[in-house]
Image (tube, rainbow, N blue to C red; front, top):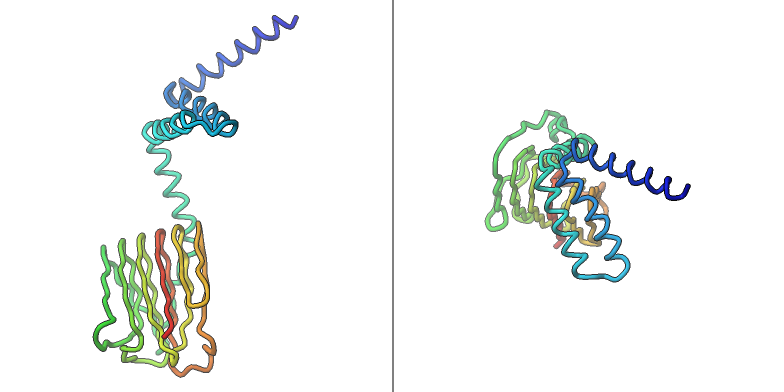
Length: 219
């Protein structure tokens, strides 16, 4: 009886293997099986061979199922963007709407000479921004800056006479504020300068990047 049960289980496993191989491809099924065995072996003895098997299997799965992986990544990015993106209708200090700019790459180096600070909204694939507010000549008492993109490297220097409020959403990366550093996956951070409400000059900075490195420094 026990022998018959073993044969039945063997036939079931063989049928499942053939069915999954026909649906997903035998290379994919074999890679999943070897990945499971490699992970199990690595947990038991930290074998380098097991680590190599895991790496090869992951690579095979990526190559064989690249389209599915891309679809999943895009869906995750889209859902995260809808949840975490800054409000496009954020109003400028004069009560008007921010005009959005679309660029492939944004490069702003505003840390060497005096410059005019005004409200703006920019969507770009790659962004590199350096702003020193101590050199800024503001147009308004309250300025709103919205920056959105795929990859961003943002640095902002804030003098003590400015009030700064930052809302930052970074899927991968970190945000460094004067009093703390935050990071990880799907990160959302909020920071305000001390005494923000009493400052005569205020800046609201809204950031969204899939991969980002954000640095806020006080002087």
